Amino acid sequence: MNRNEALAQHFAQAFDAQPDLIARAPGRVNLIGEHTDYNDGFVMPMAIDFDMRIAARARADRSVNLYSVDLDKHDTFSLDDVRRVFQDRATWADYVRGVADVLQREGYALRGMDAALTGNVPRASGLSSSAALELAAITAFRLLGQLELDPVKAAVLGQRAENQFVGVNCGIMDQFISSCGQADHALLIDCRSLDYQPVPLPGGVRIVVTDSSVRRGLVDSAYNERRAQCEEGARLLGVKALRDVSVEMFEASETSLPALIARRCKHVVTEDDRALKSVKALKRGDLEFFGQAMNASHASLRDGYEVSIKELDVLVEIQQSVPGCLGARLTGAGFGGCTVALVREDAVPNVIEAIQQEYPARTGKTPEVYVCRATDGAGLA
View 1 (cartoon, helix red, strand yellow):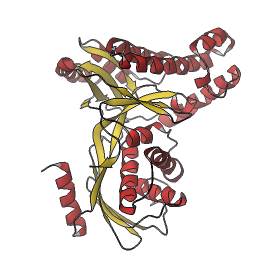
View 2 (tube, rainbow, N blue to C red):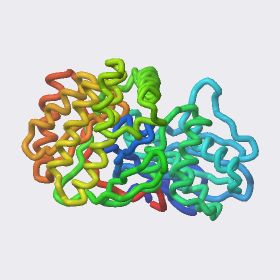
View 3 (cartoon, rainbow, N blue to C red):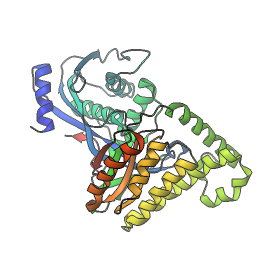
View 4 (cartoon, helix red, strand yellow):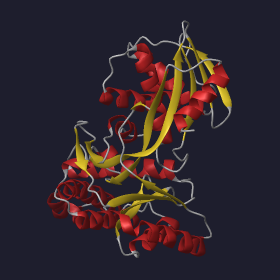
């Protein structure tokens, strides 16, 4: 039985009916361009072949009845009175409630629905299971209500739901790639204009994502601190955001900045440069350059931005030491979560073996390894 058949069966058991449709939206991994999004910069994520799915059936009334297959939990709310489940903490259902709230505030006429949810995006690992749930919910509401809603607008509304309703101050990247992803491509996203371009991922390589099994405990305070430091750097450099500073401009002004601010700014400025050069490299099939850019990105995140930890450094070192691994880096906010590596297809088993043997011996922790392909963004499953 495939995932759609299993989900339809769970739907039938929960609601004594068959679903009208099954919507899906993928998780994501960011290949390069880290901590650049809130500096109006460039990111290059890809949608991965792990997703959230919602089997849904339209209702004649204004009720939304949810069943989480993975958690075995139910939730019900009315489209006429959308609020958080609890005021002091977020739950899984708040992501769907938040989507309903922002869609209606934007003027979309929603239909009530029965919906069963499931997903295989690893939770709490930095692969954006929350954005995938938001975009799957938007897709279900859009299709049931026959709404005119383009993928970029869907991403913006998904982000708004997470920022304003759920209360998580995320950037636009996660929802954008979940909505707009393209199979066999990464996307270069301009976080200022929201312009984007597909970047082909050549054959013969795979993307290996490894969960360090370290949950990201310091992210909120460190994120706010780094963001403030970048804003101060932009102010001192006389620009709206660090995205407006070229490598040459930064080098000419570096010594005039406080040392800590200079280190933070240097990462962002050089990371934007690496992202843009990586696009050109991939378009000409230069995988070695892209891999070297990933390695340089990790070094910059470790030494300049100071968001890595021992476990992430160990994972990166292990992978970089295996022939056929072209590049590896931490991905996401840092302080835990995952690494991402570009690996030649025939070397994938060797990379996995090295991780599984060496990482527990060096850290005492058990990794989870996911071999990913780039997939399409949100739509019908």
